[in-house]
Image 1 (cartoon, each protein chain N blue to C red):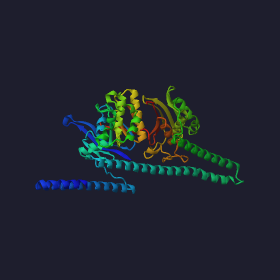
Image 2 (image 1 turned 60 degrees about the vertical axis):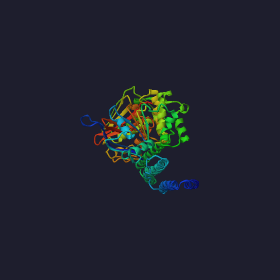
Image 3 (image 1 turned 180 degrees about the vertical axis):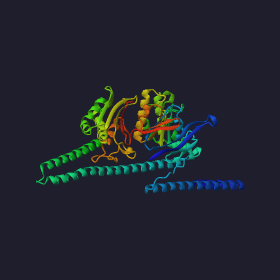
Image 4 (image 1 turned 120 degrees about the vertical axis):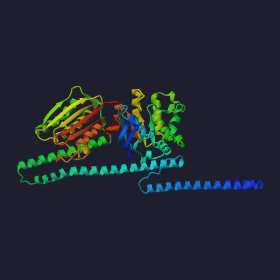
Length: 227
Length: 322
């Protein structure tokens, strides 16, 4: 079943002579439960693509359809709510809120929605992430790997339709990177979670089911590695 | 009800003190009651819409989008109900697919078994005739044995595949020489290659190693080369080479055969798929098995082909990263 469809997506920054085309007429679709890696050199437009998929940036033209909903046909408020419920984001620099504890950070998307935390789901996620002993800590009391795990928890707590990760291991050493990738793979397998990871590291991309290569704002390759 | 009683008492007291204030108070209470009534009606309408939606899902209608992306618990409920119904419908499609796949596989297998059985029946009948000359008798016996071998191969292959499918095979992870594996795979193929007068070129470095299960991987390589031999005409060429990149080690198997047509290309690794140029005895399981074996070991096989020029298979062993 199709969970994400991108149709003729283009994004241009600036205008006139200084216009930069970051994305040039990109189209692809992702099935539910797929683990897709998007790779490309820096400046290729991959981060722009992820931001547009995540609803944090708007495209110049084209459509992004997540779970049968055209994201950019909605107004600001509806988009914000949609994003909160359907999309989980993992950033390179974790973006945890420094004054909230790990527990509060993880449950933030639910609290924003004004709903109660389902303790069973919460403890299931915390256990998989191995953060049981760290729930009352503040983010700056954790290691980089642990902070990234907390941000994975935050991305998963609302059972989103897709999880987007922007260079999730970009700020970690190789041992912690391996652990994070292993964790993402495990979550993808156990929860049948659709996962889109952006990386410039081909080693990580090879762990995915499918690799989409981006170069100069266009799709340069689209290869299914395993089914 | 309680609030109505309290406000009536309040209004009465106000009326006694000042009748103007009493009228204002009455108006306010009515306004409040009206708001309450409208709000409740809206809520009941929303809930009955949800109930209607659930009933239609229950009766097997396709799920439609009921999410409205606004704040509030009713919208959250709609969102969650939508997620649940979507998951359910996805599971039921998967189940249907599985069922169809099973039925197709069964019919494929029975078909593959039936054809040789029928010809064996005929030959056994002929052998029954006591006046059959000796050379004819030997010919038929040879044919029956060939058919039996084919059935045996089919059954063992299917058993192997099903073992891999249910993950009861434990693939060893040992350092094995690529060259040794290719040599082992070539052993049983040298005779058929000689019979078809095909030229073999093979170049591979001695010091190329990959992690994997030697026995299974040899089987996978063998099936790919065998496919090449079958689709290359008499006097053709088979070239095998190896190379290493920082990400993977690969074996390249190129033949000078008839090539695979673009319509067949996406399907050649599917089980029981037979291309337009498939041989009479082809079952369509060899390449599928190669793919399954390789994919179970962090490796894969890919194909590129040009009609009339030949086909190239690339077996890639990805380096152990994680």
